[in-house]
Image (cartoon, rainbow, N blue to C red; front, top):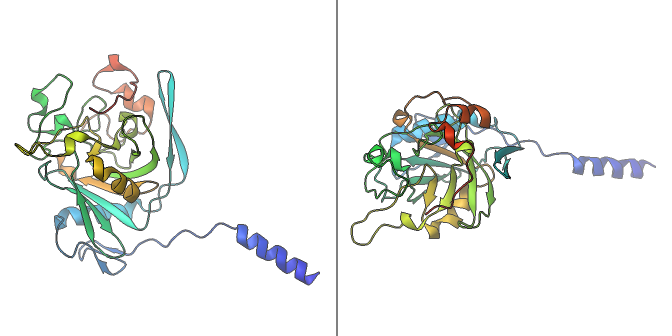
Length: 276
């Protein structure tokens, strides 16, 4: 009888959920995580890295597993959130020219950094507002502005958590993104995702790359690597926050609220279009 009780207890123990990982110990001045120096080679701007680590510390443990819904005409999108991961963080410095690697993935166990090219929104470019018609804008410089507004076609800065990887039919292995700050709280309802784009490979003649409508578009060959780094709970800090232009959308956190202040109310909910 005692043996049966012991077996039952062990079975119950095996079914119990594992305790969550301990929060990281972060020093935003020394730029360390659990005593390990982040980016010892100094690839990332130290002020931005400190900003990112402070944001990671603030948001770690605040995201729970849940499914969020985005309703489009005749279509429902479901995004599966996971708690913020403990192994890597990403830092994007949008001030760096778009044709240079500026998405930095930091290994929290070793401090090592891997860098990728990533697009900014076409209206975040210095020439952006001068091109009102839809389409790609060739870019060699960095972003000069950011927005949380729907229809802005600008980059949104702040902290993100990456959700599930999904197949969208034209950019396999894209990853949905959710904004965690007031400066990017409408990101999910702007359909901002990580996807691949041929236009992010620099033109061999002039070095130009393309711009997105605000998505974090990466080179085709980099997409599977970046997806593995960020999906299912990856933390991304896109900055600096000084690029942000204040708007009525800041801090809103529902589809209805974000669409109520969109720049083009006549658009209504829009289906996600293939990246060109």
